[in-house]
Length: 431
Image 1: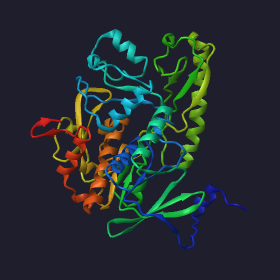
Image 2 (image 1 turned 90 degrees about the horizontal axis):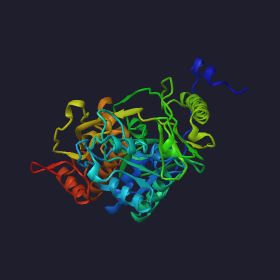
Image 3 (image 1 turned 180 degrees about the horizontal axis):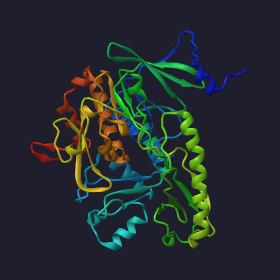
Image 4 (image 1 turned 120 degrees about the horizontal axis):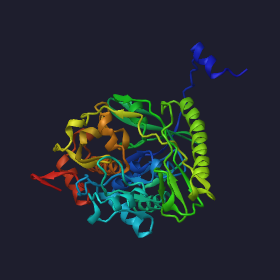
């Protein structure tokens, strides 16, 4: 008889997996693990710099929370004082999305405006957050178009994409990752990269590599889209947002009433079921109470829970609240804060690297920050900025044969700056 999970845990039963030989399927220069917005940016950046790059993703989609998570808002590319601070690949994606008619954002002349009419206009797109309220350089976009742009850019950069592939572990020698185990329908296989980039969101690679980290439980979200809305501008709920499609709105449902461990599959299973029921109940309430929704239907739920925090690296430097508006000599990205105006965080390269691994770079929401700063660095624009920096750093390490901890940071910063990224001060001036 099959033993229940509960009984196995109570008995403390263990099973020894037999040793076996595994097939090595490739030895790329750079292996990016996780195809969210940070991973896509990292892979493109490394590929454009001549590295042989593989990108693996466990699902059949790219973009993570930005796409299948339906959190399709770039919050934010500015500092809250009317100045753009995230550029580079993130701005390139905005331009590509806008060229397809699949992005909406306020023009520069409206940034930092406190005009109530403008605030109301952009609030309907989900772009107004925080207090005091003002118009920010934030972007609403279509998630499917983001995936298409990602696929095109990855192909142009020569990246080998492998979907439906799970990260399963690493083998280290001294402090270097020698092999990465992956799982798919083909079984367990091995990739032997020179540099690994962890953009898994949950820090799966850094944990497997033995890096120090922190972990928290958080309440999940489950956003969903509604079609057949008679007049989206008359929708009365404050968390119903316009989309680029006529008659369709985005509903920001959540948070759930309880916290979950995002790395516990049992916790996440319960959350998936409860959040879906809660989102459905919210839709039924909207349809009953909002005249604009009287003939609406539920188009789709997000295909992944809105989990914005789980594990975070404790790296060579932990970015803290008091580091706001501080300059770092090794800054490789900048970001504002989506709910606070007038503060900018420069992200030092040391917040992307672990003391315990010489060829691992971390990007996206699991970089080394406090929980306070994480609220800024977890957002999609910041994640793309740190992803771009991680990809450029990995390519530089491969090209120079250098340990990731001993890169020429000035060379890395100039490289990123030349590609259009904002990396902060140079000779006492802003980029």
